[in-house]
Length: 345
Image 1 (cartoon, rainbow, N blue to C red):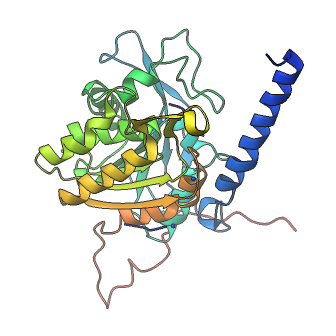
Image 2: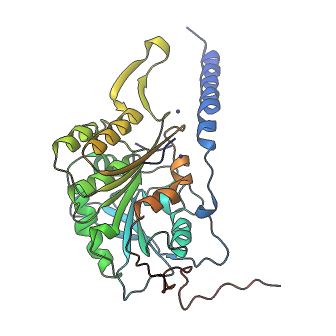
Image 3: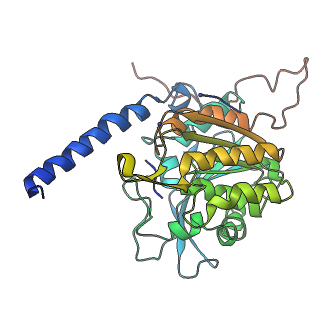
């Protein structure tokens, strides 16, 4: 399903009918938009003077054996501090077009630039991958994340390991040809929004020996393709070495169909209730879990606004030796060959 800190750890004539519909749309806009628009991007999500900027590659195409006949578009962010002689951490974002966009809600490259510069997360290569599509189908875009034009519904919402195969068996080997990436699961994270969030969790669930950190915003842990079973599955399965941060809004899709007293409620299609159940199950099982429930709808606004803090929490204990006599790891992280841009007079 396409998307639109609480605590860190909302017989008429055709002409009359048209007016009624317009009124309903206006009401939705009046009640929903302000709930999301209260969340604003901070300085950590914007390019800052003097901060070394990483580079984002052109989009590449990855043929898939897990889903024959499809390919996945992806691009790669390489931080300015990346040293090919040293293994870098890795983070993969589903619905990559939404997370890499410099004018979008998440703006991951700018966030990574700022956090790596201040040593608040490790030197991390980010990969932005879109859902699989047939060659003749359009690439995912801000206006169409691919639910109607790509393999997104099946890949992201199913609980089998086929999409995990795309990431681990197809994407990782392709990346290893160009980048020196850590093979330690503690140095690997995966995330996404909405259906991309449950997809990220499913990859870590099936392959915890490859990914130990999960970022979930407005996660669709609902009965799209059986995802509502995760809370009980978590309780029934031996604990896995996964750390996860979940964000959602109390006004996310609430499983109601219809209006007023006649509205029917479907519990396993209530996005926020399912996120609550996920946190309860993960907590009971002893997982390293954090969460925040905002006032928003099925929107990326809050997730984008707090992305820097979620990343700080996920990477809070990355290896960083501390020695009172050695200040080398207590300075702003600037590459030796970095030259600040000059300001024209």
